[in-house]
Length: 142
Image (cartoon, rainbow, N blue to C red; front, top):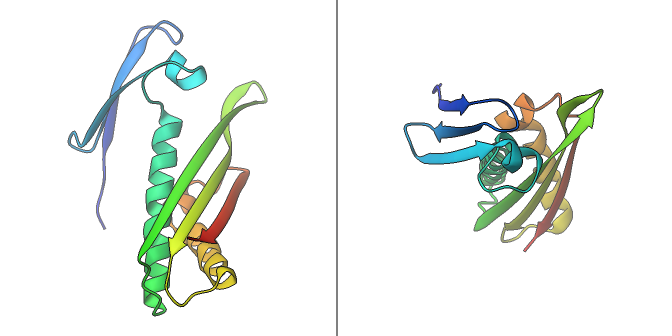
């Protein structure tokens, strides 16, 4: 299987410093800071990148499970929200909310939700995030 990469550089102290990050070989580059991570400043942050990775992985996994059972979707749209909370005095990813909307001909809502639950459990990013106390899923057809 493939090995993927990302890199980051941080300059300065935690609150006054800033950093740059790169996904892969430059497919995405962004700036991050204390304000973009813990407040509402400009730039990205690790939690947004985790949310994007989780949404992308989940959408692919759900599409694959559906297609493997003969229900090739027209589309699966996923959104993830990662909540960073202070737990035991440390910033912690405490909750992830996944929302999925699928356009799947011939499938009813309950069937779609069952497939979505399986994808949530089996997508590689969900598995990597197994230590997150709460991963909630809302799934519906378009």
